[in-house]
Image 1 (cartoon, protein in one colour):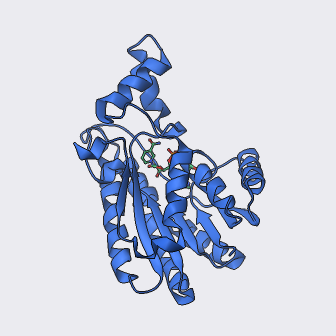
Image 2: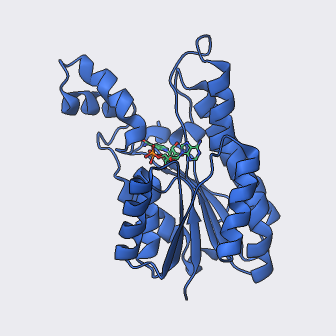
Length: 257
Ligand code: NAD
């Protein structure tokens, strides 16, 4: 069956990998992100190449609630959405004392409030059609804290809580709502943290990356974006109708400690 999936923040990193994996199911793929025309066209080409039955791009700055509403309306004018992946996210590292208040607001808006508004807009349609999947890309930081990430950790704990509430509310509707909680995944989002650690090794990126991972992630390996794509595809399976309200760590044992 051709399903329609809409993935926020899907012109790079985890979101693009999720989009390509769901495209390989032969589904219609709605892309979104803060992207240049060239990045947008490249992502559209990649999902078409991966097998998408249809592909479209939507823009909208998720810091702005009105833009999120407009985005939800535009996507639904395109196609009824069966699968929503709330993936877009922002990070900024600073202590509580030094965190700029406007970054607190922006990170909460993108990582948490936009997910809420999109779920509010799209869940009723999924329930009305009797099948749906929401996958929220949270983080291991939705389960445990680290220093210097107050808004990020607060937003991701909030996203896990939101996931569980919606899972309960839609438990009998044919719609499941789950969160994935990755540890380190090698994307642009964490490049500043890799480079900061590399500086201590004379700029050796590989050494910095290894030290960063081993601080927290017992496996010593980063995940790749495609690993998260596989997990989303699993949660979208028909067999997973009773897999709901879960916050699934993919963290090399980080949260097991
Ligand atoms: P990324 O920077 O490659 O992707 C982030 C995406 O979010 C981009 O497409 C960007 O356009 C979009 N985005 C950011 N701000 C936006 C805004 N204001 N409006 C609209 N779109 C916006 O990073 P990624 O690592 O692929 O991150 C994807 C998700 O995975 C995020 O929610 C992140 O918190 C989560 N995550 C990442 C890691 C990791 O180690 N990389 C670990 C755990 C969770």
